[in-house]
Length: 216
Image (cartoon, rainbow, N blue to C red; front, side):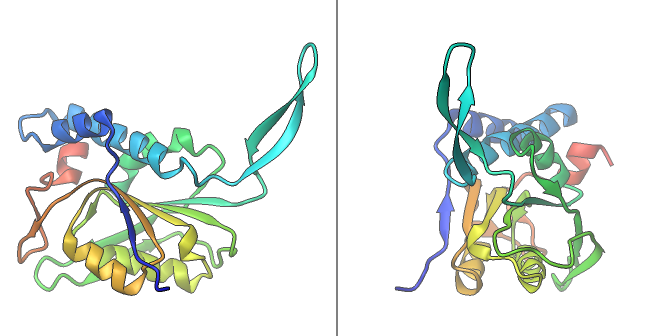
């Protein structure tokens, strides 16, 4: 049976709340950044609920031993935030991923032809087949940027079935592109926006995330 892209929009009140705060153009920049950080936290919580590799062992307590479950430290976990906006999601996600290694990736999309270019690539030469990867990219708009990221990690040997993509907003266009090229993926998003203009802007979207989060 052919695989199909799995897209999750968690029905969590805190995700809805912080998305609402981020949507409002009257939200002060500092509170907007807090909203994106919190969305990173709660979306990561949802994305990793059944994803962490676990091991069962025994712990010695003050009176007796008891069976426990721990995250397996032998299985590599990698987090790839897109620069610079993915770093805001990372602030919320990182507390939930204490064993993860962080690999930065900087991409730019031309607003005229929507082509994506890479200006910084800190990915390792090789990922093991067991490496579990979280990609943090706030907006999946045209789908060009996220497919470029996936191409980069696939070339390095990653098993894309172990990848979790975390975003604040996705569009049908991006999801259709991903379903055609990488149907084994799982995506966690706060919402799906229906429109995208000819410059690649998502509508209603969140505005300029970098400007609102970093004040530049």
